[in-house]
Image (cartoon, rainbow, N blue to C red; front, side, top):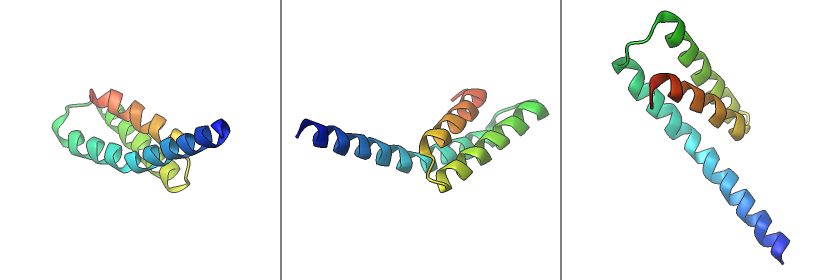
Length: 77
């Protein structure tokens, strides 16, 4: 029974992360216009954001959150 409970909780956590990817993308999109970045950093943020979206669509939510987290770090959020 303990294993079943752990499995259910793990799946629920994964599902929660899956639904958070779009919120992370929205936060990045909202912040981009108001932040002054070098061309190099802006390109990196856009690359990471696109990577995160592609990973999300492929169901790779851990990868998505990692890329989106790096983008947010560059934006200071």
